[in-house]
Length: 191
Image (cartoon, rainbow, N blue to C red; front, side, top):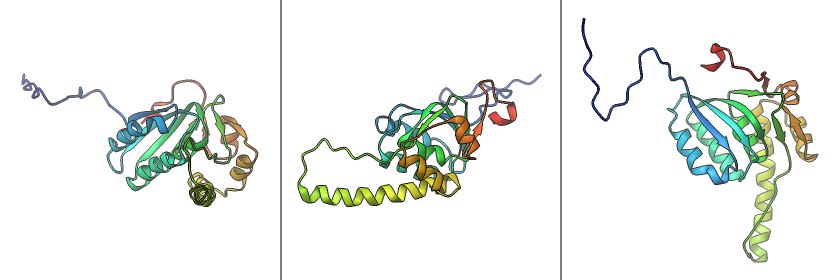
């Protein structure tokens, strides 16, 4: 009977019979407040690798959303989304960038126009430039959202214009996600 030598103290081991599966990332709360951690977690996924992202977020900064989408796309990360609660506002972009999108009948999504908020005192010229930039950013991001979902932005724009809360079932009916029951995923769907 042969015995393996113990690994060096700084080396982590995983039992041979234990499959780690893809990295799991919780995207919970405001994107902006969690941007550094979310970025670090995505950078922990090897280029071309897989991960599962669990969503329960009201949104946050559109810039943070675009940063996460950019990391996922330029690093060719194949992410599975699972919406455990809410996926609204800016959180919709990283959700749409996922290669598989799973929702429950209780998942909820809020589509709305971007909101501009400034807590700083700014001059009129800066405000005018911000307004111009913001209108362009909103237009470009709405088009991108349709592209990420892989369909025309008509339905999505209708939801945005009407500040629409959309259920998981409606997302599945629209072909934007797959509806799953509240039970363990089959083994094939987990890996």
